[in-house]
Length: 280
Image 1: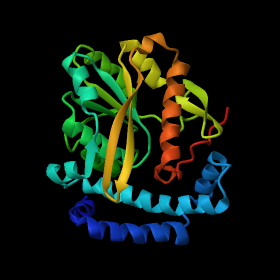
Image 2: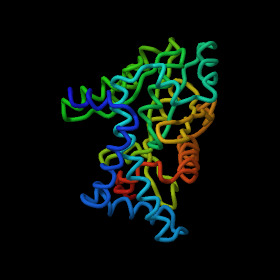
Image 3: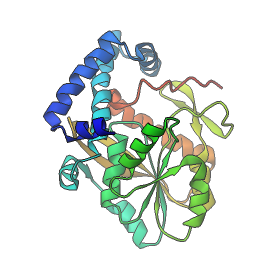
């Protein structure tokens, strides 16, 4: 823990110098998940040349190490400095719902820095945030990430407990924050298949079913990297009345919005994740 604390105290210029070195070794020496990254890029963008894909790959490695080190920075960064580095363009979309006593499901993707997104929402949202997460087997990293994710007041909730916690808070306006673009395990039978980045893709169905159970609106948080260490985000509606839509319609809309975001900034998505390991 002390090591990560020390990393968090480094000035950003030094942090990014270290990130550059980490990215170089990850790409050229250790070749970290190189085959997975290139396979995902080739299948997702068949219209792009090999040179274009390799350029995206190289930028991706740097962005990946940036995100890792920026995440540790959350252990010590001041609220003032943090809010100067990331802006929410329309935070009132959530706060207005809170004033109307309405809870909301806020979903996003593994684009740019999703950990910073959670933290900045905790700073600016009036309602409390239940941050859905997948438990980490390693106890040390589980404790580390729980500390990072709760830094500015978010409440980490293990994904298997989300429905139970939602029942407890159904009469109290709050936000359920989740990242829903990862690959569901084969043991999970509640999935929805939809075209995504030129491929038949499985998505978790839980987001749609949770929203329909409580009749909570769903919004999508889109994040953009303005410069190194600087971001902005904007919320967009997926559906106001989920009970009026099928699970498939909700997940399809989410997948479309994620894909649109990725196509705008392909180097910022999590290409090293084996997203299409599960086939129909």
